[in-house]
Length: 164
Image (tube, rainbow, N blue to C red):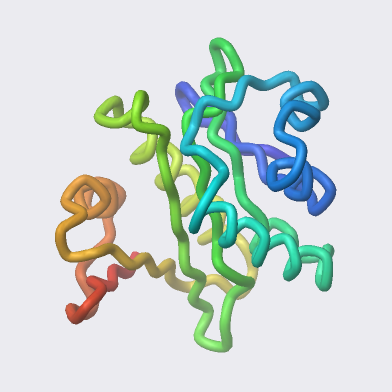
């Protein structure tokens, strides 16, 4: 399974590939014929991936909702970023999306392109009615991505919540 947009391939990682992202990035690059140049897999990002890996291993049948999706430039298979849904749709038909982009690739429209493609796919899945996203109050680039993708502000507190 993969999604395609104008410039990107969006590749969801199966649990075994997510494990390689955490623990053996060179092997993941070799297996998928990619060059990982996105945000470093360390610190908080590494912890998030490990938590998602545990969930993916418990329920591999829903990995599309629990794993990370790599954002690859189609022209050269360079990984520019990643995105994920936090879990399968809840009882209200909502899913939450998160995303990150390597510093060298910011400001080029890649994330808007990826979020738009992932949202189109998610909204076409059974049971999905809305997509949520949260941003820090000072993260203006992320807020711009969400606005470009059609999200509206839902609630404001320590985190600004958005809905599509």
